[in-house]
Length: 200
Image (tube, rainbow, N blue to C red; front, side, top):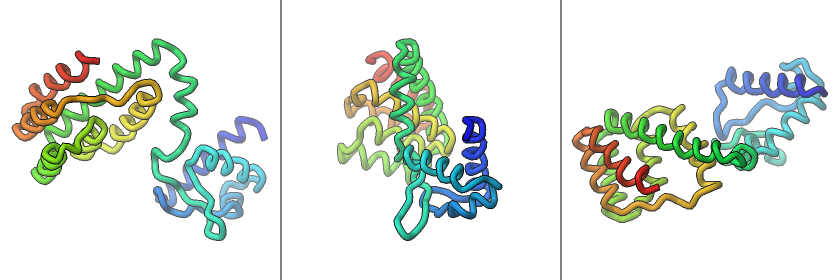
C-alpha cells in the first residue's frame, strides 16, 4: 500500500467516525464493516487500524471490539515532541505560544465563569490543592471553548517534555480568583504577566 493510499484510508476512517457521531469510549465499526464502507481491502484497513492502535487513539478489547480512547491518552504527543522540539527556535516559540493561548483562555474564563465555578476554584485554593495544571484545567472549563482546550492540552504536553512543572505561590491564585470574581480582565492578565511570564 502506498503512503498516499494509507493516508486516504486513515482520512476515510476519520470521516466515518465523524459521520457516525462517535466519541471517546464508543465502539468503532469492525474491520469487515470498515472494509465494505471504504471499498478497501481488509489488509489495508487492518494496517491502518494497527497504526491508530499503536498511537493509542483506539484500543482493541478481546472479544468486544475496537473502541476510541480519550484524547490525551495516546503516544502521538510524545512521538511528535521528540522531533519537533529538537529545534531551539521551536522550543522558544512553544513557550510563547503556550502563554498566548493561556492569556486568551483567561480572558474567556473571566467573561464566562459561573458563580459555581468560582466556588469550586475557591475550594481548591482554600484546601491548598491548587497547582498550575489544575488551575488551567479550571480556566479551560470556565472558558467553554473546546478547541482551545485541545490546543492547550497539546501545547502543555509538549511543554512538559522539556520543562519542569510550573510552581507558583498561593498568592497568585488568591489574587487571580479575586480578579476573576470582579471580572477585571486587566488585573487577571497583569497577574499572569507578573507571576508567569516575567518569572520564567
